[in-house]
Length: 334
Length: 254
Image 1: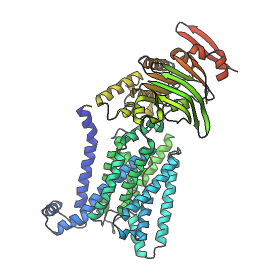
Image 2 (image 1 turned 60 degrees about the horizontal axis):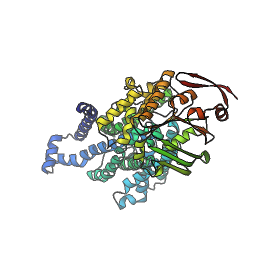
Image 3 (image 1 turned 60 degrees about the vertical axis):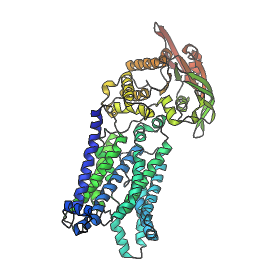
C-alpha cells in the first residue's frame, strides 16, 4: 500500500485522537474553582503541594481520565456489538449490558463485598455485563432479527432495572438508596486516581480483546457462513467479544454508573470516516465515544444548573432522539 | 487439489439431507451440481466448504480429513460463495472483494493482496463499480460483487451456490466462461446450477442429485438423459443442437 493511502487512512484516527486529548485537557481545566492548568501541571511535576496541584490531581485529572476511558470503552463496545450482531441498534445500554452491570455493582454494594476488597465493585459490574451478554448471544445464535434482538435487550434491561429497584426498595438506609440512585444516573465526578487505576487493567484487557476482533467483524459483514469460510472460528470470536465487552463495559459502569447511548451514537458518527468497514470503525468509535463523553461532561459543568446534571441524564437526553431516528431509518429500509 | 467423499451423510436438525454419497473431485474440472429443489445441493456444497459436519462417512481434502484441517488453512484452500448471501453495512464493492484476502492475512504482502483483488474485480466485471456501495447495486451486480470476493481468495477450490441464477443472459454466459477458465487454469470449480443448457455446455462433469443421493455422475450426455431428467425433475425436455453444442429446454411438467 502506498504511503499516501496509509496516510489518508490514519488521518481520521489522528484528528479524533487529537480532539479527544484536547477535550480531556479542557475537562481538566474546567470546574467550580478557577484553575491555571499550566501552573497546576507545573506544580504537580515539580512535586509542589499547592492547592492548585491538589485540585488537579484529586479532582480534575481523575474526572478527565475517567471520561476518556469510559467513553472509549462504551464507543468501542457499541461498535463491536453492532459488528458482531450486524445490528445498527445494538449498544451496551439498549441491549441491557450496562443495566445488568449496574445491577451487579449494586448487589456487590449491598452484600458488603464492596468494603471487603477494592476490585469487588468492578468485578460485580463485569459479572452482570457478562450475564447479559451471554443471554443476548444465546438468542442471537438462533438467527434473531434486528428488532427481536433489541426486544431481548429491552427485556434484559427491564429485568436488571427491576432487580435494582428491588434492592433499593429493600434498602434499610434511605440515604444509601439515594446515593445509589444518583450513582445510577451516571457521573464522572468525585472519583480518585485510585478508582482510575482500579479499572484501567480490566478496561485495557477488554479493549485488546475487542480490537483484536477487527478482521472477524469485517468478515461477518458477509454473514456467518462466509465469515467461517474465510477462516474464522465464530464460537471463539463470540467468546472474545463477549469477554471484551464484559471487561470494558462492566468496569466502566461499576465506577461511573450508567452512561447511555454513547455506544449507540459513536459508531454511527464515525462509520462514514471508516468507509463503513466494521473493523475500522472500532478504533474510531472508541475515540468518538471518548469525545462525546468528555464533551457532555464539560457541557454539564458549563450549564448553570444547581445541582450539576448527571452525565447519564445528559447523554440520554441527547441520545434517545438519535435512537428514534435510527429506528425510523431501519423501518424505511425494510 | 482433490476431494474424496466416501459414504458421506449429512443431517440438519435430525433430518437426513445427504445419504451415503461417494464421489471424487479433482483440480482442473468444472463440476455442475444439478437437481430439483431440496435435493441437497446447497447442503453438499456447505459440507464441502466445511460449514456442515457430516454425521457419517469420510470427507478428505487432499487425503486429509476436513475436520482436522485448521480453519484458516482450509479457508485458503476452499473459497465458498453462498446463494443470496447477506452483505451488511453497505460496503463498497472493492471493500467486499478485499474481504476475500482475509484468509491470507499476515502471510501475503499487501501488494499481492491488491493485485488479487484487482484480478477478481476485473474477472467478475465489477471493476467499474468498485466505489459503489453494494446496497445500491442490482441483484445481478451484487452477485458479481460477491463472486469477486470469492475469486479474490484465489483458492484452488471454488464452491459456488447458484452463481448465475440472478444474472442477465450476457453475464450468465460470461460468468460460466469465467468459471470454466478458472478450472482450465487448474482450479476445482463446483457450482450449483439450475439452467441445464448452461450446465451441459460449460461443465466437464455433472452430479445429478435427487433426495440426497447421486442418481447420475458424468459428462452431460450421460447424466442428463430424458429418463434421468424425468425421474429427477419431473419434466419433459426439448433438445436441439447447434455448432456450439447441445441445448436442453425444460418443456412440460410430467
